Length: 93
Image (cartoon, rainbow, N blue to C red; front, side, top):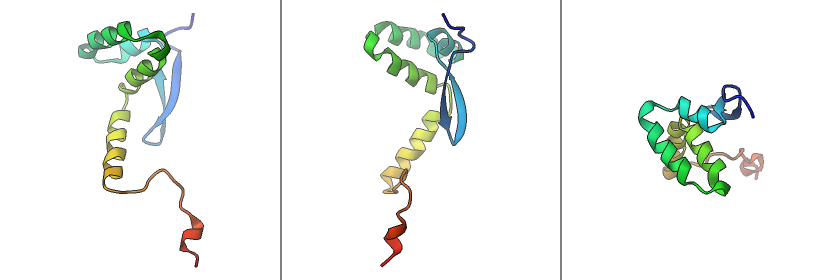
């Protein structure tokens, strides 16, 4: 079995490489005390084939990822096109 202090996932939050805890115990330890009971209840009720998705969501909640997601959603609602490289041919006629 892996060590909960070294098992991590890696992602990018606000353009910065971020390590996330990648075990149930590691995620629980990273959560504020007030969220741990809700985490335990949700993990206990999650079907095995969905467990990895729920764990990633909780692991991301220990970072600024939620704020970044809200910012992206706000920009999309304003009609901003994001996440695609500029089309160099668009300006050519």
